[in-house]
Length: 212
Image 1 (cartoon, helix red, strand yellow):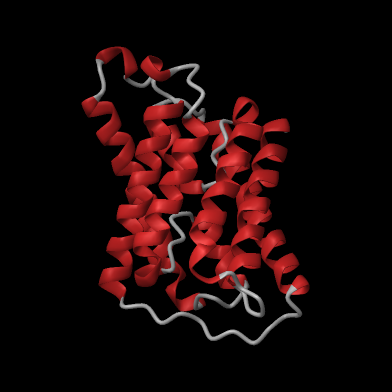
Image 2 (image 1 turned 180 degrees about the vertical axis):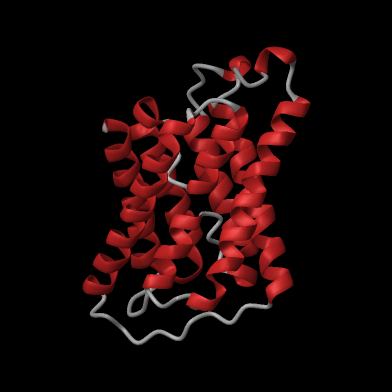
């Protein structure tokens, strides 16, 4: 249960940061990716030793696929992450006075590709910095993970919104920043990228780093 509480908390603050930074009024504009990446970084450092600091169903799927998360934990992780994202979205709407928001228009193929690339980068970095034996005990994993999100968001958010995370995608949908009809784009791209990242990790790493 402690792991699920930590996953709820971490995802909550990640999605809350998204909402407070991009919802009008008083959004912070082009600096939002830096704030969101920083939020993920500090939450990874805060909770990584308890739950692994996934805060992302696609990352949980990647870590499970890689063999470092038991299947029995996966439903609880996903439920905690989604609940944290929805709770944060509702709070952000409250703080912002439930503003009228026009959902982002997406071109399906570019959005799918952007979300796939960004999520692959994130999951691949998580696996290599936080689950590989050769990098065990490092002190930079949270910084690497947070800055991966910031980098991908700076580059790709104009195309897809830069969720790279099904819980974030659900949160921004609750905040009316994304259309409900486009949610499948995020879910498909994010989970597919997490699976490919796990397969790639297992292929390129030494035998000692293969799934346990």
